[in-house]
Each structure stands twice: as C-alpha cells, then as structure tokens.
Length: 178
Image (cartoon, rainbow, N blue to C red; front, side, top):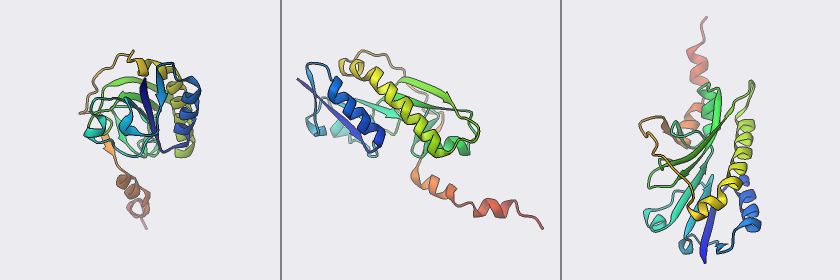
C-alpha cells in the first residue's frame, strides 16, 4: 500500500486533507509521517522539503500564484502591487528549488476592480481546492503530463520583500511637493 502525506499550513489544505480522507482510492492511505510516505502533496505548505525527504518520492505542490511568473510567498499582495489583471493557481512537481518544478496545470482567473489581497487569496483558495479534487487521484497514479517552466521568467517573492513593501512612508515622501 502506498502512503500519501498531505503537507499544509493553511485552512484550504485542511479542507483538502478532509476531502482526501473520504476519497483516497484503494491501494493508498494517508500518513502523518512524511518520512514513511511514497507521495507528498503540498497545499500552501510553509516549509521547503529537503533533498533527502524528496528522494524516491513523487512530490507535488498546489501553489497560490501563476508560475513561472510568481514564485514564493505573499503572491496575492504582489499581484495587486504589480497591477496584474489576472491571478492564478498552479499545480507543479516539487524539485529542489522554490517553485521551479515542472508545471502540470496553471488556472488563471481575473482580478476584480477593488480586489484586496485577502479577497484575492480567498479566491485562489477556492480554485486550489477545486483543482486538488480534480487532480488528486491522477497524481497518486502518476497520470499527468508536465512541462518544464522557464525559470528565467518571474522572480521568487520572499517574506522580507513584502515587509519592505509595507513601509509606505518612502512612497509618501517620494510624491510630496510643497
């Protein structure tokens, strides 16, 4: 029997886990121990798996941004800051870098006028849960196609970058004239 570890640090991931408990096909079971797993599925997990942990396992990530343009964290905020017209969620294979694995699917959706980071994040979670339900069994059986992403596109957004962007005093000073 193959063991599946679902890694998450977010509410949407808990929904995915609860759904998987009821819908895991015969021949597979969920485990709470990543080291005994054969398959790792990350749903907005906040840690990076070591090379040793990934060795010999199939590993996938449900990512809250459109790849390859938006890697890293705080993506709902960055999509708004960068005045994007669309957002997206991505399912990709996990490799040894941050959000650089082969892409299985990207689902884009519009960013509405007046959208906030919170409302955009909630929208992304809805799309991610739907995507999880549609891909779960196929991932377990390895029935998918993936394509390498162009890692020269986009950038990796880090938490510290978002912390810097929160300081709006320099923007106020930059546009203040007497």
